[in-house]
Each structure stands twice: as structure tokens, then as C-alpha cells.
Amino acid sequence: MTGKLKRFLNDEKLREMAAYVLFGVLTTLVNWAVYFALTNLFDPGNHPAGSSAQALTLNLSNAAAWMISVLFAFFTNKKYVFKSSEQKASALKEFTLFVSARVLSYLLFDLLIYNIFVFGLALNHGFTKILMNVLVVIFNYFASRFVVFRQRP
Image 1 (cartoon, helix red, strand yellow):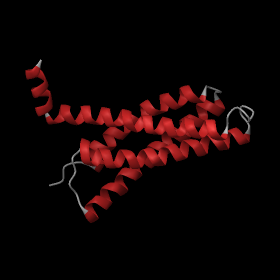
Image 2 (cartoon, helix red, strand yellow):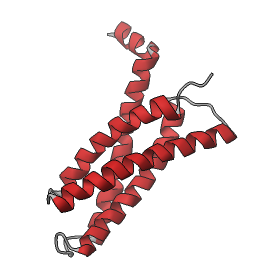
Image 3 (cartoon, one colour):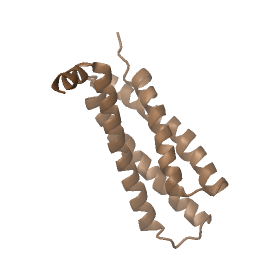
């Protein structure tokens, strides 16, 4: 068992993927905690389902959860997952690319698909939120690995 653990920890790709999964789970928990706290705080069942008031509350809660989780994800991915040591201008470029990739995934998944599923197909917003997070994690890994934190010559 100890030998397998040592090999696992010494394999950079496996370590990176495991760290990404771990911090992806933590980022998802941050996202869900903010989202469900805000939806319960601002829409504890008072707005009729499908009303514009409920749509506004759910979308604002989703946006706030996204912003906070993106900041959390950037710093944990930079330091612990991809171990980037870029400073100043290069770090700003990483941050810009990271946020741009997250904006794209937000537009594709959290806004477009979320709204289609919740308001178009009338699926439960909690179930839809979980499904969207799975799709976002997959998309974001590839964007981070191959665009944002790629090894530069």
C-alpha cells in the first residue's frame, strides 16, 4: 500500500488530477453553500415557482455563487493543482485567462443550460444545479490544464 501511494504521489499527472478533483469538490461546495444560502435567504418559498421574482433571485444567487467560487478556484488551482509560480504580469494574464474560461463555462452551462432546464423544462433547480456543476468541472479542467496553466517554454 505504501509503495502504491508513493508511486501515485510521484506521478505528476495523477497528483495533478487528484488535486484538481479535491479542489474541484471544495470549489463546488463553496458554490453550493453560497447558492443555497442565498436562495434560502432571499426566496424561502415566498416567490411563486416560475415567477420573475423567483427567476431574479435564483439567477442572482447563481451569479454570486459563481463569482465567489471562481476566486476560490483560481487561487487553489494556481497554488496547489498546477503549481504555477507566475508573478505580476504573467499572473495577471493567468487570472484573465482563468476568469475568461470561467465566464465561457458560466454562459454555456450556468446561464444557458440552467435556464433552459429550470425555466424551459421546469426541472428542479437543485438537481439542475448539481448537473451543471458536473459539466462545468469537466470543461474547466481542460481549460485550466491546456490554456490557463499550461507549461510555457
